[in-house]
Structure formats: C-alpha cells, structure tokens
Length: 99
Image 1 (cartoon, rainbow, N blue to C red):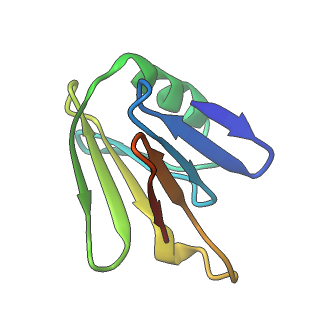
Image 2 (cartoon, rainbow, N blue to C red):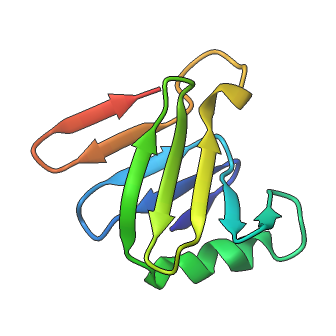
Image 3 (tube, helix red, strand yellow):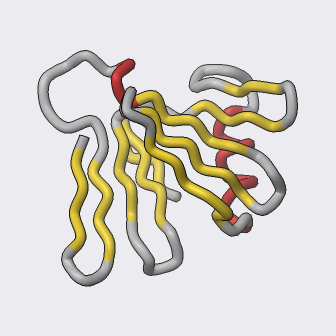
C-alpha cells in the first residue's frame, strides 16, 4: 500500500496493483471508516498483512475486497465524477483493466 498525493496504490504480493483516485471505505462489522475520519490510514495499514479472500466488481463499478479477517474494502468508482480513469488494475501477463 502506498499513499501518493491524492491517490492510493494497493499492491497484491506481485499479483497486481490497483492505483485508485477514489479513497476506499473500510468495513469491519458494523463500523465504517471513510477518508478524512480519525484512524483512516491506520485502518488501511492494518489490512496490509491480511490476505485477500474475495473480490467483486459490480455493474455500478464498485469494487469490494474481502480480507481473511472478514474486513471489507469498498471502492465506489462512480463517486469520482471527473474525466479520466478512476482506477487501473495491472497484473502479470500484461493484464490491464481501467475504470
């Protein structure tokens, strides 16, 4: 995980990277932590050691990532209404996905 000016890069153990201009929301049970809230970056960093268990991308262009500790990350890509890409997923074997 890298914090870069106004975006975030999520890395997945050499299996890919997801730079995103939309700050993820973190769900842990009933608790939701959003960008700007106290402890937001700490909560993101706590997920670094957690393995990803599932990824879902909805038709509404929302990415859900579920971790082994049952925390979830929600990245609502349509929340960013400026022109251009909002997220780019790169993976080995030249896979590239953009939203």
